Amino acid sequence: MRRVALVGAGVSKFGVRKATFRDLVWEAGKACFDSVPGLRPGDLEGLVVGAVMPERTAFQSHVSSLAAEALGIRPSALSARTEHMCASGTVGIRYAYAFIAAGLADLVMVLGVEKLNQPSGEEAILNMGAGVDREWEAAFGLTAPPCFALAAQRHMARYGTTEEQLALVGVKNHAHASKNPNAHFNKGATLDQVLCSRMISSPLRLFMCSPITDGAAAVVVASEERAREVTDRPVWIRGTGQALDGFQLTSLPEDYAEWPALGRAAQSAYRMAGVTARDVDVAEVHDCFAIAELIAYEELGFCPKGEAGRFVADGRSDHGGDVVVNPRGGLIGCGHPLGATGVAQAAEVFVQLRGEAGARQVPDAAIGLTHNNSGMGEHVVMIYGREPA
Amino acid sequence: MTYLRAVDPFPLQSADHNKLHEFYARLAAGRLSTTRCAGCGRAAWPPRGFCPECVSDAFEWVDLPAEGVIHAFTVQETGLPAGFDPPRVFAIVKVGGHRIFAIVRDADPAAVAVGSRVRLAPLRVADDPKGQPRWLPAFALA
Image (cartoon, rainbow over all chains, first blue to last red; front, side, top):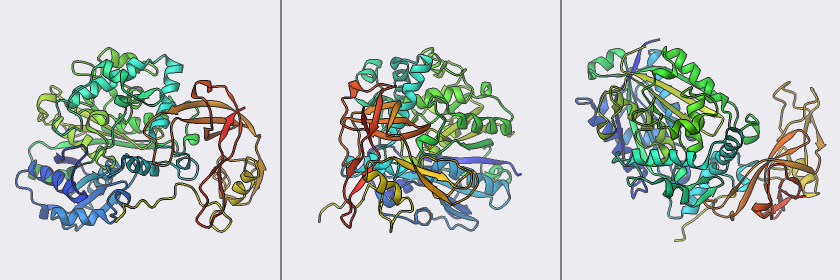
């Protein structure tokens, strides 16, 4: 297989946006092209668009072609849309990676985009129910928060994880988001504010949850030869892994505090990258809810099983700790425009490994990891390096 | 022009729409049931159209116990989709060796606990577009 790298990245402003689906594509695409001086849309051979539900939120299918035209890309090797609920963006990056590694393409953009907010907030939430099983789950009114609440209940009962430790994930990620001008939230949040925010689904409170957000993000993925032509600082894709335990809640392992598929996806990625958890300097993990970040510390190997609450409380996942987790603010602070999230995670690792992250820079970051999931049993992990594997 | 919302959140359950219609017919009669593979004898939850173990599509319907125990639960207080009211108790109920996802109906959230006994309490939801009643497999505290 050929070596593959990221050579450019750009992100739109995330938030409740007064913008069309196409406006968001333009914003992220323009920011991405601006990050690669000299690169023109006509140079790209393909586009993969990660988007979950434009049919419901923008009454628009066929979005990869729409986005290609909006961006001026004329695909000659790869044109596709990926939908894998919240992991759609990273699944798109894996497609581009595979095509390029196999020699079927040399230069491809991956763009994730979602316009979730609707005139009625209740409708926006109703749409989110499309991500769980319609007949056996969503018909009861299920969306994501109660699923992850079940994991939080179990983690607290089994390991003694506290509400305060869950809240500290919210405090950390809101603080990180305050240094990210593209984040949905910029004001930070105190421990009291998180603990006193309204209950969504017990024990998860508002500031322990990612909001409903509009946004887009884009990266350019290149073969080694093309990467070295367009930049002197490529960020290499060193490893990737994906694993699934199940789709329905009742197909997952009986103890919802255990996410073995994430462990398996991580081990695949580490093995391929030739690194271990200790080597990771910066990690963008899928904190759709605070409990997800805690369980990710454990399954990714940053700390032993059951110790994630102490890990965050001791500052080991913040600047100055073992690994900086979610320096851009994570899904809790940046928001979670479904298809855009995985690509925005890659864009953050791109700027971190190039030393371009400004106020939120992790000093001398050399190895970065992204973790994107779609439910508690479906995980994708990517590992990036300043140097190739 | 009215801002339109066209979505039916409930499954079509009748014989001309759903291979598992027998499940809903039994549920309407107050029975909880599932499929058992005629090839290898495994019972599934939820019921399914062919067996992932032996790939047989020959199955029979078997009744499950009407009572179960709460294995895990959460109470959603805000952020429910349009058409669903809080507080809503979502639970994983253990019934006859299966884990079943459902709501616990009409419960005081403070009275619900892991280990609470529950019984089947089918929930009637909006009729289908032809006016046929529809039911979901919900539970209530026993």
